[in-house]
Amino acid sequence: MTTNTSQSSTPAAAGPEGGGVDLATEFLDRSTPLSRIRNLLHRYPALSPGIVLVVAVIVFGVISPRFFLANNLSLITQQVAVVGTLAIAQTLVILTAGIDLSVGAIMVLSSMVIAQTASQNHVPAALALVLGLLVGLAAGALNGVLVTRLKLPPFIVTLGTLNIFLALTLLYSNSASVIGQNIPALITSTGATFNVGGIGITYGVVAMLVLYIVMAFIMGKTAWGRHVYAVGDDKESARLAGIRVNRVLLSVYVAAGAILAIGAWIQIGRADAASPNAGNDLNLDSITAVVIGGTSLFGGRGTIWGSLLGALIVGVFRNGLALAGLDVLYQTLAVGVLIIVAVSLDQWIRKVRK
Amino acid sequence: MTLSEDTRPASTLPYTQPVLKATGLVKTYGRVVGLDGVDLELYQGEVLAVIGDNGAGKSTLIKCLTGAEIPDEGQLHLQGSPVHFKRPQDAKLYGIETVYQGLAVSPALDIASNLYLGRELRKPGILGSVFRMMDTKTMRSNSKQELDRLGISTLQDVTVAIENLSGGQRQAVAVARAAAFGSKVVVLDEPTAALGVRESNQVLELIRRLRDQGIPVILVSHNMPHVFDVADRIHIQRLGKRAAVITPQSHTMTEAVAIMTGAATA
Figure 1 (cartoon, rainbow over the protein chains, first blue to last red):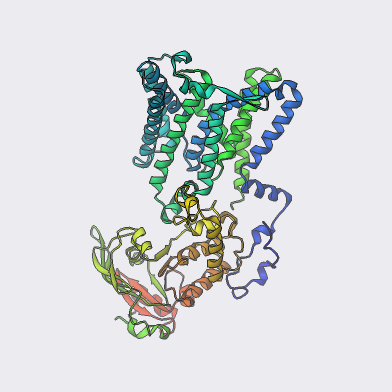
Figure 2: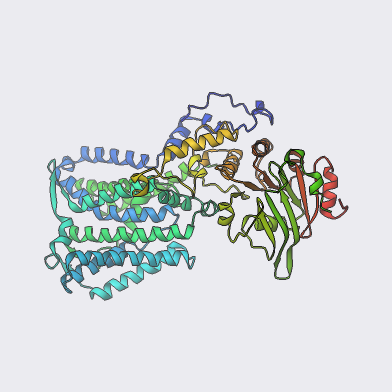
């Protein structure tokens, strides 16, 4: 990082003639230990949640011997699968400096469509999943159109659609759940487990991990991913660079809708049922995971993997505190503190920008 | 009134044809006349400064040249052929690159990403066509070459994020992006407005370097010393018209201001 600082950078010596375009690397020279840490965290946004996760795992492992039992680790992964998937969709939106309050509602609407068409309308399981995907895409597109065409703030748009999707879900399902027995096996297969080194892993967890790998690739290696970052970073600059900002924004919400539909599939397997009330906490939980994962609410900064770490941190804290015998209320308290700490850290890191 | 023929720099004489030529540009906003029949010629290898008081039609002129506004009347010719720009993208496609006021770069992205923003290269073969992978390595090495070519030697590490750079360095990146990859005309709108003395000098030096490499530059600026420092010819805009074209040799700064304000004619 500081390989090119060999040249002298005394400001006084570098007059107008002294070196022509004398773009001294003054920033790189100015390094106290604290600013070095800050620059490191700035460069690798997933670093701080990674450290927090490792420390949390060690601490909870020491506190409670049951923490490292295969069953418990399996449970944590399963608890994280749905919120982890929703966090991918949320990351995309937050990277564009938006926020999506409707992720849980879209996921539930999609899951009810999958479960009901398969169980009551006897639609083949694969087709039911496709219908669920279409619902997710349509819901995402609605958010995207409202954000890009009506130029409404994403917070307001998704606050509105959250209620709309919730109401649609309750109307469509008559507020009734569909139990697992009535749902074809293909749809509930995301809850089935296989063994890895004694730890039961569900196919839902695998699906989530595959989604993370695919989206991390897209965000890091494709022009579209870079454009998403650019739009979130500075919309006007992106526009002037020739990026079609509205098209990128719309595609982000549609992609989020598709990811949420996959989340719906994972959720049905995890719960072995489709319930119209399953998504109520997930709207905010997904934001929590993304924020703790080091993605900035101001957009343009963060990683997909950070959100997995964020989801795991919340999962590990909840689980670890429960194993330590603390009341559920303390889990909520701990998550609240984590959010504040994560956002404060983000603010501090962003001060690198002068 | 049109002195452009006489004042054309000697070095451009072999190029009898202007790179960019505007004739009779008219732009009105309702009853307000922004441009009232403006001509402009830009020759190969020159820095043409555009100056004028507020409301003289400077920015309207620039907007019409770069596709941000569509003129009501008048023609644009690029290297002799007529062109019509409906949006900034059209001008870009023809090789007219604009650096807008206020540092239009993406702070969180690195230098190479900014240079290639909106025109990323893909990897050859199936990785690029099917998996849409960007060719980050080539983009970085090309960016490095491009910066070296423009003489921005101190921006060694193209993987540094823009936000870690000083204002002058950011402006250098913005200018480099405009000048890179075969652009025909570079338009700079107040490139030194937000910069300190030292950083301004760096940017002026960069403008000279662009000119020396044959890229003609249109420089819009309020800063008379900067204009007289770097410009080959100066287009003075007044009340929606071209009042005069002068050179730093033919007129003094005071005379230029006099023409600008209508106290004198050229």
